[in-house]
Image (cartoon, rainbow, N blue to C red; front, side, top):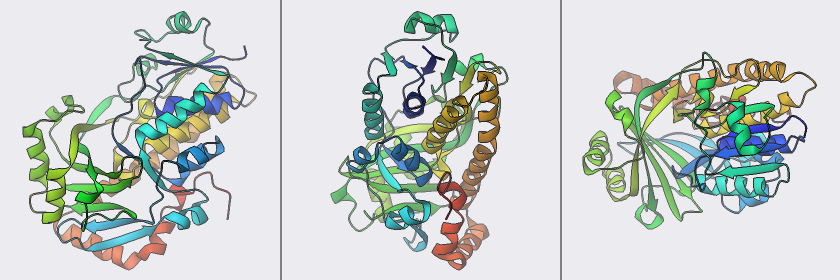
Length: 388
Protein backbone atom coordinates (compact mmCIF):
# COMPACT_ATOMS: atom_id res chain seq x y z
CA UNK A 1 0.00 0.00 0.00
CA UNK A 2 1.53 3.33 -1.08
CA UNK A 3 1.25 6.29 1.30
CA UNK A 4 -2.01 5.32 3.04
CA UNK A 5 -4.18 8.27 4.07
CA UNK A 6 -6.49 8.49 7.08
CA UNK A 7 -9.26 11.08 6.99
CA UNK A 8 -11.04 11.96 10.23
CA UNK A 9 -14.61 13.03 9.43
CA UNK A 10 -17.04 11.93 6.72
CA UNK A 11 -18.78 15.20 5.98
CA UNK A 12 -18.56 17.08 2.71
CA UNK A 13 -14.87 17.93 3.24
CA UNK A 14 -13.83 14.41 4.20
CA UNK A 15 -15.75 12.58 1.48
CA UNK A 16 -14.58 14.99 -1.22
CA UNK A 17 -10.98 14.63 -0.06
CA UNK A 18 -11.31 10.84 -0.12
CA UNK A 19 -12.53 10.89 -3.71
CA UNK A 20 -9.88 13.37 -4.86
CA UNK A 21 -7.10 11.29 -3.30
CA UNK A 22 -8.44 7.93 -4.49
CA UNK A 23 -8.66 9.20 -8.06
CA UNK A 24 -4.94 10.01 -7.77
CA UNK A 25 -4.07 6.51 -6.61
CA UNK A 26 -4.01 6.90 -2.80
CA UNK A 27 -5.45 4.29 -0.47
CA UNK A 28 -7.86 6.11 1.85
CA UNK A 29 -9.51 5.26 5.17
CA UNK A 30 -12.30 7.57 6.32
CA UNK A 31 -13.07 7.40 10.04
CA UNK A 32 -16.37 8.79 11.29
CA UNK A 33 -17.71 8.64 14.84
CA UNK A 34 -21.38 8.67 13.74
CA UNK A 35 -22.92 5.27 13.11
CA UNK A 36 -24.81 6.65 10.10
CA UNK A 37 -24.26 9.74 7.97
CA UNK A 38 -27.10 12.21 8.47
CA UNK A 39 -26.39 15.76 7.31
CA UNK A 40 -28.17 18.67 8.96
CA UNK A 41 -28.54 22.30 8.02
CA UNK A 42 -30.95 21.98 5.09
CA UNK A 43 -29.86 23.94 2.04
CA UNK A 44 -26.50 24.54 0.40
CA UNK A 45 -25.33 26.90 -2.34
CA UNK A 46 -22.77 25.40 -4.70
CA UNK A 47 -21.02 28.16 -6.61
CA UNK A 48 -19.10 27.37 -9.83
CA UNK A 49 -15.72 27.15 -8.08
CA UNK A 50 -17.08 24.17 -6.10
CA UNK A 51 -19.38 22.54 -8.66
CA UNK A 52 -16.47 22.49 -11.14
CA UNK A 53 -14.52 20.16 -8.85
CA UNK A 54 -17.49 17.87 -8.24
CA UNK A 55 -18.02 17.65 -12.00
CA UNK A 56 -14.34 16.72 -12.46
CA UNK A 57 -14.97 13.90 -9.98
CA UNK A 58 -17.65 12.57 -12.34
CA UNK A 59 -20.70 13.54 -10.28
CA UNK A 60 -22.54 15.88 -12.68
CA UNK A 61 -25.36 13.53 -13.69
CA UNK A 62 -26.14 12.64 -10.08
CA UNK A 63 -26.09 16.29 -9.02
CA UNK A 64 -28.31 17.42 -11.89
CA UNK A 65 -30.90 14.97 -10.64
CA UNK A 66 -31.28 16.82 -7.33
CA UNK A 67 -30.11 20.41 -7.68
CA UNK A 68 -31.68 23.58 -9.09
CA UNK A 69 -29.76 26.14 -11.11
CA UNK A 70 -31.44 29.47 -10.24
CA UNK A 71 -31.64 32.12 -12.93
CA UNK A 72 -30.17 34.83 -10.75
CA UNK A 73 -28.94 35.90 -7.34
CA UNK A 74 -30.98 38.86 -6.14
CA UNK A 75 -30.55 41.43 -3.38
CA UNK A 76 -33.86 42.80 -2.07
CA UNK A 77 -34.79 45.35 0.60
CA UNK A 78 -36.41 43.40 3.44
CA UNK A 79 -38.78 46.18 4.40
CA UNK A 80 -40.11 47.31 1.03
CA UNK A 81 -39.33 44.22 -1.08
CA UNK A 82 -37.72 46.61 -3.57
CA UNK A 83 -35.12 44.93 -5.79
CA UNK A 84 -31.67 46.40 -5.16
CA UNK A 85 -29.44 44.41 -7.50
CA UNK A 86 -29.00 41.05 -9.16
CA UNK A 87 -26.35 38.83 -10.71
CA UNK A 88 -27.31 36.38 -13.44
CA UNK A 89 -26.75 32.69 -12.76
CA UNK A 90 -28.32 29.76 -14.63
CA UNK A 91 -26.98 29.49 -18.18
CA UNK A 92 -25.01 32.71 -17.63
CA UNK A 93 -22.97 31.08 -14.86
CA UNK A 94 -22.11 28.12 -17.06
CA UNK A 95 -20.93 30.45 -19.82
CA UNK A 96 -19.02 32.97 -17.72
CA UNK A 97 -17.54 30.72 -15.02
CA UNK A 98 -17.61 27.42 -16.96
CA UNK A 99 -19.61 25.59 -14.27
CA UNK A 100 -23.10 25.75 -12.72
CA UNK A 101 -24.32 27.80 -9.80
CA UNK A 102 -26.71 25.45 -8.03
CA UNK A 103 -28.69 24.99 -4.83
CA UNK A 104 -29.59 21.69 -3.19
CA UNK A 105 -30.09 19.99 0.14
CA UNK A 106 -26.89 19.23 2.06
CA UNK A 107 -28.10 15.69 2.64
CA UNK A 108 -28.40 15.16 -1.12
CA UNK A 109 -24.81 16.21 -1.73
CA UNK A 110 -23.55 14.05 1.11
CA UNK A 111 -25.55 11.09 -0.19
CA UNK A 112 -24.01 11.46 -3.67
CA UNK A 113 -20.50 11.79 -2.26
CA UNK A 114 -21.05 8.80 0.01
CA UNK A 115 -22.24 6.60 -2.87
CA UNK A 116 -19.18 7.60 -4.90
CA UNK A 117 -16.85 6.78 -1.99
CA UNK A 118 -18.52 3.43 -1.38
CA UNK A 119 -18.09 2.49 -5.05
CA UNK A 120 -14.41 3.53 -5.04
CA UNK A 121 -12.20 0.47 -4.37
CA UNK A 122 -9.41 2.60 -2.87
CA UNK A 123 -11.71 3.99 -0.15
CA UNK A 124 -12.76 2.31 3.09
CA UNK A 125 -15.32 3.91 5.37
CA UNK A 126 -15.27 3.19 9.11
CA UNK A 127 -18.49 4.38 10.78
CA UNK A 128 -19.19 4.48 14.50
CA UNK A 129 -15.51 4.76 15.40
CA UNK A 130 -14.61 7.40 17.96
CA UNK A 131 -11.03 8.71 17.83
CA UNK A 132 -10.45 10.07 21.32
CA UNK A 133 -6.73 10.67 20.86
CA UNK A 134 -6.07 11.37 17.18
CA UNK A 135 -2.57 9.87 16.91
CA UNK A 136 -1.32 7.36 14.37
CA UNK A 137 -1.46 4.40 16.77
CA UNK A 138 -5.11 5.05 17.63
CA UNK A 139 -5.92 5.42 13.96
CA UNK A 140 -4.03 2.23 13.09
CA UNK A 141 -6.15 0.34 15.64
CA UNK A 142 -9.18 1.23 13.47
CA UNK A 143 -7.70 0.88 9.98
CA UNK A 144 -5.21 -1.95 10.54
CA UNK A 145 -2.18 0.01 9.36
CA UNK A 146 -0.23 3.15 10.19
CA UNK A 147 -1.27 6.21 8.18
CA UNK A 148 1.31 8.04 6.13
CA UNK A 149 -0.90 11.14 6.07
CA UNK A 150 -3.63 12.23 8.53
CA UNK A 151 -6.30 14.68 7.39
CA UNK A 152 -8.60 16.44 9.82
CA UNK A 153 -11.95 17.02 8.12
CA UNK A 154 -13.93 16.86 11.34
CA UNK A 155 -15.51 20.30 11.25
CA UNK A 156 -15.41 23.33 13.46
CA UNK A 157 -15.29 21.28 16.68
CA UNK A 158 -12.35 19.29 15.33
CA UNK A 159 -10.44 17.06 17.73
CA UNK A 160 -7.59 16.68 15.31
CA UNK A 161 -6.99 20.43 15.57
CA UNK A 162 -5.54 19.69 19.02
CA UNK A 163 -2.75 17.74 17.31
CA UNK A 164 -1.64 20.75 15.25
CA UNK A 165 0.53 23.16 17.30
CA UNK A 166 -0.59 26.75 16.84
CA UNK A 167 -3.92 25.89 15.24
CA UNK A 168 -6.66 28.52 15.38
CA UNK A 169 -9.20 28.73 18.18
CA UNK A 170 -12.97 28.76 17.95
CA UNK A 171 -14.61 32.16 18.32
CA UNK A 172 -18.29 33.17 18.41
CA UNK A 173 -18.94 35.58 15.52
CA UNK A 174 -21.71 37.56 17.20
CA UNK A 175 -24.33 36.23 14.78
CA UNK A 176 -27.00 33.54 14.96
CA UNK A 177 -28.38 31.59 12.01
CA UNK A 178 -31.93 30.28 12.05
CA UNK A 179 -32.31 27.54 9.43
CA UNK A 180 -35.74 26.41 8.34
CA UNK A 181 -37.78 25.19 5.38
CA UNK A 182 -41.01 26.42 3.84
CA UNK A 183 -43.50 24.65 1.60
CA UNK A 184 -43.78 26.19 -1.86
CA UNK A 185 -47.47 27.00 -1.52
CA UNK A 186 -46.75 29.13 1.56
CA UNK A 187 -44.25 31.33 -0.28
CA UNK A 188 -46.48 32.61 -3.10
CA UNK A 189 -46.14 36.33 -3.73
CA UNK A 190 -43.04 36.75 -1.59
CA UNK A 191 -40.35 34.29 -2.69
CA UNK A 192 -39.15 33.74 -6.24
CA UNK A 193 -38.50 30.13 -7.20
CA UNK A 194 -36.19 31.27 -10.02
CA UNK A 195 -33.57 32.90 -7.83
CA UNK A 196 -31.50 32.92 -4.69
CA UNK A 197 -32.77 35.97 -2.80
CA UNK A 198 -30.96 37.81 -0.03
CA UNK A 199 -33.36 40.12 1.79
CA UNK A 200 -31.34 42.85 3.53
CA UNK A 201 -32.15 44.86 6.63
CA UNK A 202 -30.62 46.57 9.67
CA UNK A 203 -28.68 44.05 11.81
CA UNK A 204 -30.25 41.07 10.01
CA UNK A 205 -30.75 39.42 6.65
CA UNK A 206 -32.67 36.48 5.21
CA UNK A 207 -31.55 34.20 2.39
CA UNK A 208 -34.15 32.12 0.54
CA UNK A 209 -33.86 29.72 -2.36
CA UNK A 210 -35.77 26.75 -3.78
CA UNK A 211 -34.90 23.21 -2.76
CA UNK A 212 -36.00 20.88 -5.53
CA UNK A 213 -35.11 17.81 -3.48
CA UNK A 214 -37.27 19.04 -0.57
CA UNK A 215 -40.19 20.43 -2.53
CA UNK A 216 -40.05 23.91 -1.05
CA UNK A 217 -37.70 26.70 0.01
CA UNK A 218 -34.68 26.85 2.26
CA UNK A 219 -34.61 29.87 4.58
CA UNK A 220 -31.61 31.10 6.55
CA UNK A 221 -32.25 34.08 8.81
CA UNK A 222 -29.11 35.62 10.31
CA UNK A 223 -29.42 37.97 13.25
CA UNK A 224 -27.15 39.45 15.88
CA UNK A 225 -26.70 37.48 19.11
CA UNK A 226 -24.84 37.40 22.41
CA UNK A 227 -21.72 35.43 23.25
CA UNK A 228 -23.67 33.30 25.72
CA UNK A 229 -25.73 32.09 22.75
CA UNK A 230 -22.73 30.13 21.45
CA UNK A 231 -23.62 27.13 23.61
CA UNK A 232 -26.89 26.59 21.76
CA UNK A 233 -26.46 24.49 18.63
CA UNK A 234 -29.17 23.16 16.38
CA UNK A 235 -31.95 23.66 18.91
CA UNK A 236 -35.29 25.42 18.97
CA UNK A 237 -37.46 26.85 21.71
CA UNK A 238 -40.40 29.24 21.85
CA UNK A 239 -38.26 31.87 23.54
CA UNK A 240 -35.49 31.55 20.99
CA UNK A 241 -37.96 31.57 18.09
CA UNK A 242 -39.33 34.87 19.38
CA UNK A 243 -35.80 36.30 19.34
CA UNK A 244 -35.70 35.58 15.63
CA UNK A 245 -39.11 37.12 14.96
CA UNK A 246 -38.23 40.20 16.98
CA UNK A 247 -35.20 40.84 14.75
CA UNK A 248 -37.57 41.17 11.77
CA UNK A 249 -40.31 43.12 13.58
CA UNK A 250 -40.19 46.13 11.24
CA UNK A 251 -39.72 44.13 8.05
CA UNK A 252 -42.31 43.52 5.32
CA UNK A 253 -45.41 41.74 6.65
CA UNK A 254 -45.04 38.98 4.06
CA UNK A 255 -41.52 38.17 5.25
CA UNK A 256 -42.63 38.09 8.88
CA UNK A 257 -45.46 35.74 7.96
CA UNK A 258 -43.06 33.34 6.23
CA UNK A 259 -40.82 33.22 9.29
CA UNK A 260 -43.80 32.38 11.50
CA UNK A 261 -45.00 29.60 9.18
CA UNK A 262 -41.63 28.03 8.36
CA UNK A 263 -41.14 24.46 9.55
CA UNK A 264 -38.46 22.86 11.73
CA UNK A 265 -36.46 25.96 12.65
CA UNK A 266 -33.09 25.31 14.24
CA UNK A 267 -30.86 27.76 16.02
CA UNK A 268 -27.14 27.85 15.11
CA UNK A 269 -24.63 30.22 16.73
CA UNK A 270 -22.15 31.08 13.98
CA UNK A 271 -18.61 30.38 15.15
CA UNK A 272 -15.35 30.80 13.29
CA UNK A 273 -11.82 29.47 13.66
CA UNK A 274 -9.16 32.12 14.09
CA UNK A 275 -6.17 32.25 11.79
CA UNK A 276 -3.65 29.63 12.88
CA UNK A 277 -1.58 26.68 11.69
CA UNK A 278 -3.27 24.13 9.41
CA UNK A 279 -0.57 21.44 9.51
CA UNK A 280 2.07 20.14 11.88
CA UNK A 281 5.03 20.11 9.50
CA UNK A 282 5.15 16.32 9.23
CA UNK A 283 2.00 14.35 8.35
CA UNK A 284 -1.12 15.95 9.86
CA UNK A 285 -3.22 18.59 8.08
CA UNK A 286 -6.60 20.28 8.60
CA UNK A 287 -9.05 21.17 5.84
CA UNK A 288 -12.41 22.93 5.62
CA UNK A 289 -14.05 24.17 8.82
CA UNK A 290 -11.49 22.33 10.95
CA UNK A 291 -8.82 24.68 9.58
CA UNK A 292 -10.63 27.93 8.85
CA UNK A 293 -14.36 27.95 9.61
CA UNK A 294 -15.83 31.26 8.45
CA UNK A 295 -19.14 33.09 8.58
CA UNK A 296 -21.61 32.26 5.78
CA UNK A 297 -21.95 35.80 4.41
CA UNK A 298 -20.24 34.81 1.15
CA UNK A 299 -21.91 31.35 1.03
CA UNK A 300 -18.48 29.73 0.65
CA UNK A 301 -18.03 27.40 3.62
CA UNK A 302 -18.69 24.16 1.74
CA UNK A 303 -17.02 25.51 -1.39
CA UNK A 304 -13.78 26.23 0.47
CA UNK A 305 -13.80 22.70 1.92
CA UNK A 306 -14.25 21.25 -1.57
CA UNK A 307 -11.46 23.45 -2.93
CA UNK A 308 -9.22 22.41 -0.03
CA UNK A 309 -9.80 18.72 -0.79
CA UNK A 310 -8.90 19.16 -4.44
CA UNK A 311 -5.82 21.30 -3.75
CA UNK A 312 -4.51 18.97 -1.04
CA UNK A 313 -4.78 15.93 -3.30
CA UNK A 314 -2.93 17.80 -6.03
CA UNK A 315 -0.11 18.81 -3.65
CA UNK A 316 0.26 15.31 -2.22
CA UNK A 317 0.47 13.85 -5.73
CA UNK A 318 3.63 15.76 -6.51
CA UNK A 319 6.99 14.05 -6.22
CA UNK A 320 7.91 15.69 -2.91
CA UNK A 321 7.87 14.69 0.74
CA UNK A 322 4.60 14.80 2.66
CA UNK A 323 5.94 17.65 4.78
CA UNK A 324 6.78 19.71 1.68
CA UNK A 325 3.40 18.90 0.12
CA UNK A 326 1.54 20.07 3.23
CA UNK A 327 3.54 23.29 3.33
CA UNK A 328 2.79 23.90 -0.35
CA UNK A 329 -0.91 23.26 0.21
CA UNK A 330 -1.08 25.70 3.10
CA UNK A 331 0.91 28.37 1.27
CA UNK A 332 -1.36 28.07 -1.77
CA UNK A 333 -4.63 28.10 0.11
CA UNK A 334 -3.99 30.78 2.74
CA UNK A 335 -4.30 33.83 0.43
CA UNK A 336 -7.46 32.40 -1.09
CA UNK A 337 -9.10 31.76 2.29
CA UNK A 338 -8.06 35.20 3.54
CA UNK A 339 -9.66 36.86 0.52
CA UNK A 340 -12.90 34.91 0.97
CA UNK A 341 -12.96 35.89 4.64
CA UNK A 342 -12.61 39.55 3.64
CA UNK A 343 -15.46 39.17 1.18
CA UNK A 344 -17.66 37.61 3.87
CA UNK A 345 -16.83 40.48 6.25
CA UNK A 346 -17.69 43.03 3.57
CA UNK A 347 -20.99 41.30 2.81
CA UNK A 348 -21.82 41.28 6.52
CA UNK A 349 -21.23 45.02 6.67
CA UNK A 350 -23.29 45.65 3.52
CA UNK A 351 -26.16 43.27 4.24
CA UNK A 352 -26.79 44.55 7.78
CA UNK A 353 -26.20 48.23 7.00
CA UNK A 354 -28.51 50.86 8.46
CA UNK A 355 -28.99 54.62 8.27
CA UNK A 356 -26.78 56.58 5.84
CA UNK A 357 -24.62 53.53 5.15
CA UNK A 358 -27.66 51.64 3.88
CA UNK A 359 -28.59 54.53 1.58
CA UNK A 360 -25.06 54.66 0.21
CA UNK A 361 -25.05 50.90 -0.32
CA UNK A 362 -28.26 51.07 -2.34
CA UNK A 363 -26.89 53.84 -4.53
CA UNK A 364 -23.66 51.94 -5.25
CA UNK A 365 -25.57 48.78 -6.14
CA UNK A 366 -27.81 50.70 -8.52
CA UNK A 367 -24.86 52.37 -10.25
CA UNK A 368 -22.85 49.17 -10.63
CA UNK A 369 -25.40 47.07 -12.47
CA UNK A 370 -25.44 43.30 -13.12
CA UNK A 371 -22.38 43.15 -15.41
CA UNK A 372 -20.09 44.92 -12.96
CA UNK A 373 -21.38 42.83 -10.07
CA UNK A 374 -20.67 39.64 -12.04
CA UNK A 375 -17.16 40.87 -12.81
CA UNK A 376 -16.61 41.41 -9.07
CA UNK A 377 -17.20 37.67 -8.61
CA UNK A 378 -14.84 36.41 -11.31
CA UNK A 379 -11.99 35.87 -8.83
CA UNK A 380 -14.29 33.80 -6.61
CA UNK A 381 -16.52 31.82 -8.97
CA UNK A 382 -13.98 31.55 -11.77
CA UNK A 383 -11.33 29.88 -9.59
CA UNK A 384 -9.86 26.95 -11.48
CA UNK A 385 -11.79 27.72 -14.69
CA UNK A 386 -10.08 27.68 -18.09
CA UNK A 387 -8.87 31.10 -19.15
CA UNK A 388 -11.28 32.92 -21.41
